[in-house]
Image 1 (cartoon, one colour):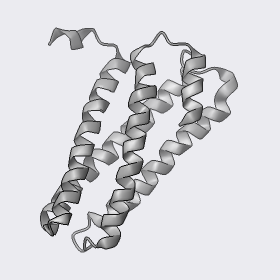
Image 2 (image 1 turned 90 degrees about the vertical axis):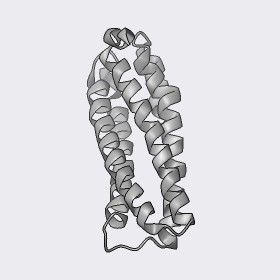
Image 3 (image 1 turned 120 degrees about the horizontal axis):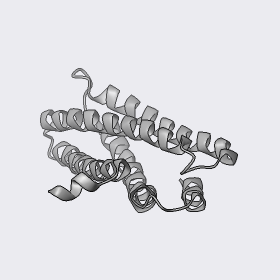
Image 4 (image 1 turned 180 degrees about the vertical axis):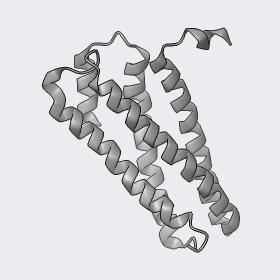
Length: 158
């Protein structure tokens, strides 16, 4: 209980984002399961919950990573170009996801095979992104004493 009082801002972000990742995976599986059982009404309900969580989460990450990437302690002045590219990848993921969720969370939009196939593809991308973030970026944020070279090495892989 008291351990969270002594966490840094970055460590608190990592803790919150990791919990959100777990919720995103659970909701995605629920949507797919309910769709597979032809319970499209419940699938749509779960999709709306997923939509709210994912959009808030990705937007928050984008903002926080942008701030962190601009900090001298995490990134050198020489790497402004790669910083911009890194931020752009986050933006593209968010835009594609937002388009999909906006379309299928509409009450008038039916959940069809295209929805199911696309959601499966999106789920794969999200899982890869979550794994990468947790195994690389979140570790760097948790261990604030890592140097710029380590941050740069992982940033280029993303």
